[in-house]
Length: 109
Image (tube, rainbow, N blue to C red; front, side, top):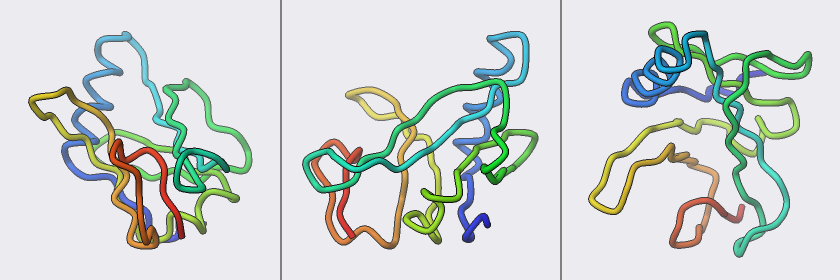
């Protein structure tokens, strides 16, 4: 059910760094919800456990989780971590999104 969703090396490094700082493994949960200024929005959470309906996306010991409802809306997406002058954040590079808002959190299909 992963729908070819992947983590970039930068995202994996940051998840691993967060795990190291926490002193235990953390997982990045990515879900898609209705709302936001473009129709859908990403919700990102750091969690310790996987839910039964979630697929694991792993790279270099880091894990992201995507549920079975969100996965088709993110097919082919890359979960990245970017550091810019204005701050750093996880960013979803979704090839299905036809438009997105300026903050990159909401999108439309």
